[in-house]
Image (cartoon, rainbow, N blue to C red; front, side, top):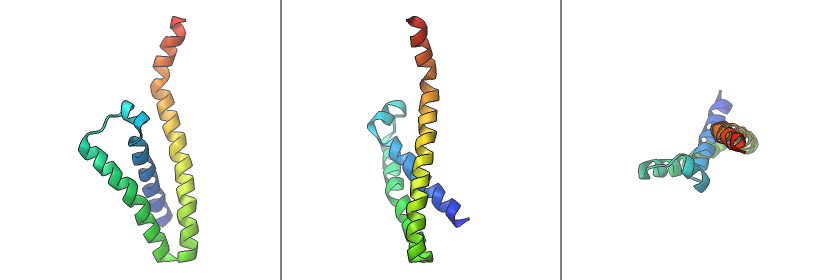
Amino acid sequence: MIAFVLYFLWCIAFVSHDCLQTHSLKLMPLTKKQRFSAQCIRFFAPLLTLVWCLYTDPAKGMLLWLGLGSVAGVTVALALAYYKNKRSAPTQKALRQKS
């Protein structure tokens, strides 16, 4: 159960990181409050997971923190790529029909 919560925190951190990127701001514009909360999440979620992992067991916790961060990063990258591809599919289909 702890690993799932840590994985979820990592995923939230990666999604908020992507929301703050300039290419994503064109798709999903953020207000000033939303940007600030995304920056806080991007900073505090990995920090919280690190503290939680090191509190339980320092040696295994560090490996768990790195491993879950890697798996969450790949998962979020694949999910965002699928979502962005699916979102832009009607535009690509219309461009193909024009030519």
